[in-house]
Image (tube, rainbow, N blue to C red; front, top):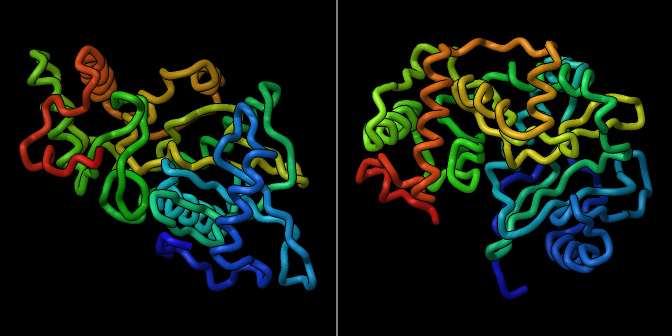
Length: 290
């Protein structure tokens, strides 16, 4: 292989028959043309030979130029947290490996042998979302675990252009947008309940039921640890999000209503510019990643 493999996660307890990196990369590209669908363009199931109870019959590989190690670290943290806390309402696929190869990111995880949820499952999915949004951040950095760009509908094109090292930087940018565009409201994230998991991409296709009927959260690209007002804003985007919001089954730390309305105002203010740069300080602007 001409490009270098850089490993970010190598789970010591992973199944014994996980292939080497070169084999995973080669097989992933070979299988994608056969397994790609309208709702799955980045994931492939790789069948394996199972020789013992320490082996698995399949692995799931999500890969592509847009797949980040922040997503891999977040999925791993959430999967471990749910298991360690014995939370039965939802689980996440275990991450075996995560690495980059050139411009491509690869997340190798447990294969879920189950069915995609549908609209008849909205009740159990809402319960699963409730469990997810209670998960506290492992640190004080907003975004995916270990840092990274934030995927959230607040931003133009649904993704931030920089990493925020602190909540104060994120708050400063939001208030900078509001000030730059002549709006008088402001956010105060210090008044909220810290950083909690934000399920920003609420789509029914991102939840499955495994063989035991348990709900499984899949696709962690839209997950970050953020002030709760960001989840309140995410509930305003998309038909399924609206249905979850109106299900009456969600209880979460209610952020000040002024923060939610100010966030919505700041997001709307960005739209005419088609840029997330508005209101950024010179220091933050220097961190642009795209």
